[in-house]
View 1 (cartoon, rainbow, N blue to C red):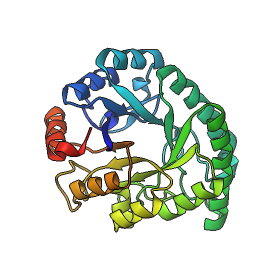
View 2: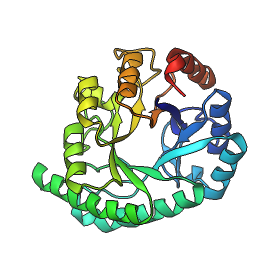
View 3: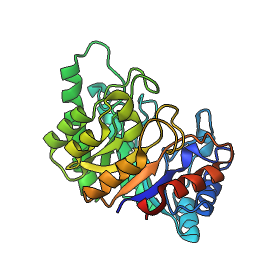
View 4: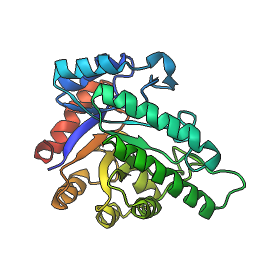
Length: 275
């Protein structure tokens, strides 16, 4: 059975990150994830004033009985950590990966999300695909040496991330299979891929061999799972039927003003589908 986690960046945005962990626990969840170690999303932007301390975040998790599933290496547009789709930024990206792994080891995290970066002017789609394959091949080797896992995230380019390169689960899976490392897997974000591809259950089934994480939010709106056009109960039952026992991360912006109430209602909606 899948386990449900919460991305702390999009809930309780008026609180510092450590208090968000406590609030998520009070709402009934004991798995979290976050974006960057050197910034925290404050509801409008990723503020470097919200830089996270590895020892402190590990301690608050120990105190509250919360586990951190993953963090993020680089921003979708490469502003944090560079863009592996651009060979000229490879060293910057790999330096960032080493930094993230070092932080993760101190914080007790074994997995991180990686983004492609935006389209590169002057390069063809084939050239950018090849640059990603080379970059993530090197990144997978670094991750393997550290006992770490990277999960590649395709995003939607129609609503949230115009200009982002990797907006296809099919292409992401192709690159992952070409690299052929257990330390490079796929993050299937149901919200993003519903916008780009639809046919969610079939596309999940086609890629389950490389999936190591899910994200979930409603479409449209990126809000609670019980609204919108997606039947999340059916989707999660299907994921469970595939034998997936990893994490589905709630990465949504609450439409219900009280974030704690939003999470509790989401938990009630999921009922026995979550651990």
